[in-house]
Image 1 (tube, rainbow, N blue to C red):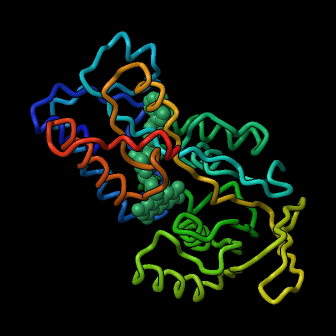
Image 2: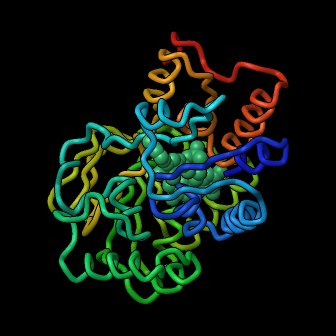
Length: 302
Ligand SMILES: Cc1cc2nc3c(=O)[nH]c(=O)nc-3n(C[C@H](O)[C@H](O)[C@H](O)COP(=O)(O)OP(=O)(O)OC[C@H]3O[C@@H](n4cnc5c(N)ncnc54)[C@H](O)[C@@H]3O)c2cc1C
């Protein structure tokens, strides 16, 4: 969205294609967890509306389509892929990965069938069909009254995303434990916000178990060995896997190998959060417009 906005200002004919039925990507999800992110989303939506950018939603871009369109330059900003980390029990039905959660809360279609009952699926489908799940403020309020999570939720992954989800859930009356193998929580957060968040989570009695090892997901609990070497078990009606996001440049490399002028930005290059995506968009737009070039990483960095 940011690159399209900039390229439009630079006078290019820009087509922005998104596979889902609305723009915003992970920023929509991030806006739910941290409302301040919503201001950026609204601003970008407003700027695009006022621009000449040709927005096409519900279009999955592939090599074939781009051969038909023959663009002068392509910017790939397809985001990270989220694979479930190899934790025993990660396949169990009460375990949600990033894509499951997005589908559940924002009304997408993937990954819900074996996770939630038909009632919840009807609600999310209706939300998507009526456009209600397009309204992040509405979802934020609605989830204060109803969420398909039990009282005890364990989050595995203690970086920015895991901590924001912990804040979101504890604010909705859940008893939350966050477990990570990393010795410190809050990777991706700037120092001040990290300290503030960790303090707030402590005030809300969220348990933060850093330096955990041997994490295993059972039917109704998560077990692990804590920093002091003691075996621990936490009740878990639901488990959220807030780790495993990595960059994915498959499409970019495929297009590059076929001779297209390809640029990349955002999490598809490796998770760089909103700041990284905005910076990458600015750099890629500058390169396309004839400024400092080559934002495509070398093949060896895959
Ligand atoms: C719960 C949560 C909270 C977060 N909170 C913060 C925060 O507070 N601060 C922060 O900096 N970051 C936060 N993040 C991370 C941040 O949201 C992401 O790093 C950022 O939005 C990545 O932007 P992106 O444009 O690179 O990718 P995405 O936002 O993932 O966008 C990629 C888009 O490309 C589309 N797409 C993929 N493939 C195709 C295709 N072939 N054809 C067409 N479309 C395609 C996808 O559908 C998607 O809409 C959070 C993330 C989560 C999950």
